Image (cartoon, rainbow over all chains, first blue to last red; front, side):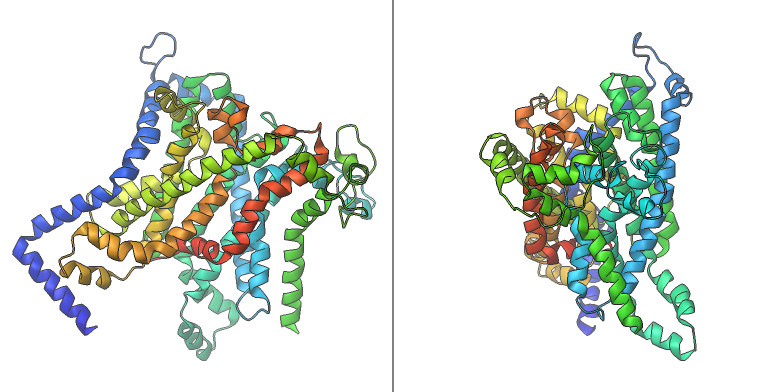
Amino acid sequence: MQTTLAIRRLVRRRGARQGAGQLRRNEALTGMAFIAPSLAGCLVFVFVPFLDALRRSVTNGFTGGFAGLTYYIEIFHNQSFLTAVANTGRFIALCVPALVALSLGLALALDESVPGHGALRAAFLLPMAVPVACVALLWQLLFHQNGLVNAIPRLLSLPSIDWTRGGWALACLIISYVWKNVGYNMVLFIAGLGGISATLYEAAAVDGASPARRFISITLPCLKPTVFTVTVLSLLGAFKSYREAYLVAGSYPPGSVYLLQHTLNNWFAKLEIERLSAAAVVTAAVILALVALLNRAWASDAGL
Amino acid sequence: MMKYVRLGLLCLLAAVVTLPLVMTLCASFMGEAELMEHIGAVLPGGSGRALTPTLPAAPTLRQYAALLLDTSVYLRMFWNSLLTVVPVVLGQAVVGTLAAWGFARYRFPARDGLFMGYIALMMMPFQVTLAPSYLALDLLNLIDTRWAIILPGIFSTFAVFLLRQFFQTVPYELVEAARIDSAGEARLFVWIGLPLGLPGVASLCVLSFLDNWNLIEQPMTFLKSQDKWPLSLYLPRIGESNVDVAFAASIVTLLPTLLLFFYCESYLVRGIQMAGLKE
């Protein structure tokens, strides 16, 4: 502590000598130099091309003239786009909270006191290593009309269902999403839980707080920064679920799992670049707003 | 008592989670007749009920032999994967470490806004940047070359996000102490940043390998010639005509990731935890 203070004082003195403005300018330049390679790559491969997409979304594809919001209005009257947006929204609204709750539950259950917790943790992480392409094959085996999951309705003498079709396909997609990501989030939550000081719990126990009360008043608030990360990464994973839907059912899957990515992909295949650009701009704006919103919600202590 | 109930439930859940992999492994050692008996029902035109693949009655390596020895397709795709994934992972480690250090250690205008942009970029589904990226790669004459996957992959913002979280936990005092020894900023990074960051970088490499071994959309869109496709597209390609090798192919596809998983689990776990670190 003593040395720290001494160092801080030294830094300040050096800062005063050089002039604080100069020092800050140097710092900024050095920082930007470190980021330069990464930023240059992002500019070349994403940001600048994306500006081009923005331009295309307001430019008439045939005449080259300014098209205003024509394409934006058009996509919001496009039935398949609207269906896809609704499906994607519903998928995310269902799967992300389910995943967060389940992985938090697992993290709470699987603490260090459980015998063999290392092996159990490895088991829950294992699906991460399973390539998406294998998942498609397993879907077929499990959820097909004649598949293994239908043993359950058969046991209850109910008719067997083809889970890969109709509304059930969404449930299949959610299950495989949770299966794949639950271990990852669990590890994040275990780390977050481990970071909560034990004295807080002891103090609360002395004050006679019930376990439920302790969970609500200590655990949840202390987990806030973890929840931010978990939510961001869960959303990321949710968007990646498109791969499963695509590999199982191709470009035109059953209605309930026809996602935004399917629409965008199909428009790309049909070279409908203007519509695609407009939809991409809207999606990017929504994601950016979502990140900003999440960041603000957790900004107080997320350390972001 | 409660403790055993909890342990039992956890074991049951773990069994359910690992079951699909166990079934794949069992099915990969089955001969064609036995395999059809189990999964024939879920193939087009099949009837009856599928059976859970368990230990094969007559284990055989025929599927593996058919896959690895009878054609060279598999081996070529394996090489394609390796030649794509390794440069991506190494490039990400270099570019990502530098940028993460910059974000974590220095203050400059618009830094936080830019970082938020990075997070948003990390979350963008591939299809959002599909058309712009395609046009950029086309302009650079990279379409249908391995570089169309490698170059954009190197600049993944996920690597920057993960490593920045890690670098933020490096004690401020340590860096300042070195700064007082009048070490230049570059030397500061090499002597303090890199050694402290190395475990983080190793974890990033594990996570990034798992992710890039699984690329589907990028190679499908950017590589026209199928002889350049990576292994991740092998399974989707074999389809239903020769489903008999599908399970062996699944196992061999996931073998590298599985080995990595078991040998580097501690790095993997740390890599995951890294994302949740805070100052």
